[in-house]
Image 1 (cartoon, rainbow, N blue to C red):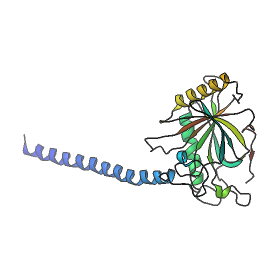
Image 2 (cartoon, rainbow, N blue to C red):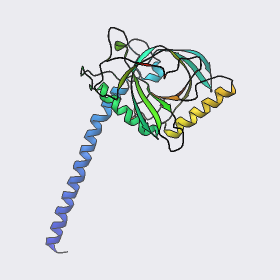
Image 3 (tube, helix red, strand yellow):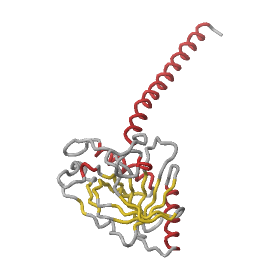
Image 4 (tube, rainbow, N blue to C red):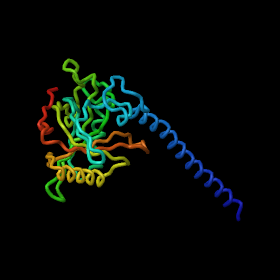
Length: 252
């Protein structure tokens, strides 16, 4: 091989290798910053909640809405009564739960990161719920309302949550409501939510238990980076509960 071409090849190879190594280092550094920050933000490593509210076994140390379990039928459902509480919500129209939940999550994440009148950061809570009103046909868009529970420090009348600056974000005052809950593990996607909602509805129907069938909720408790022991829930509102559609948006 001509020495001139050999030298050119060596220089090209060295330059190409440097580019690859630089990109690799950038990715590693990004992961070193992003992963620990996200894990710390979403999970407290199983620590007990300071205020003792919310089941720590599924909330990973984050604040959760207050509820009481009134009935458990192993392998079928759990019946819970949720206390009145404030939630921050945004609504997304679409065909995919995964896509809509992702878009809604980022909108609400912006709010808790300081996109509010007071420019205050708000603690992340669990779960992230999605209220789903299915479209009336296979090609019709579904209404997805994504919500974060508002931390307890903002639940009192004299201490309202920060006021959203995004017109698509609202603070919602939910009254007490009762739900039938189906729990499952793994990384849930569109078909998983649908199949568990269908199975729960069929179970309740066979048992003669009435529930609201025009909408349902999904509830996710884990960071995207959590690989094992993930916890997911589907909620069907019991007919003896206040319809969660009848809520009042708190005046900012």
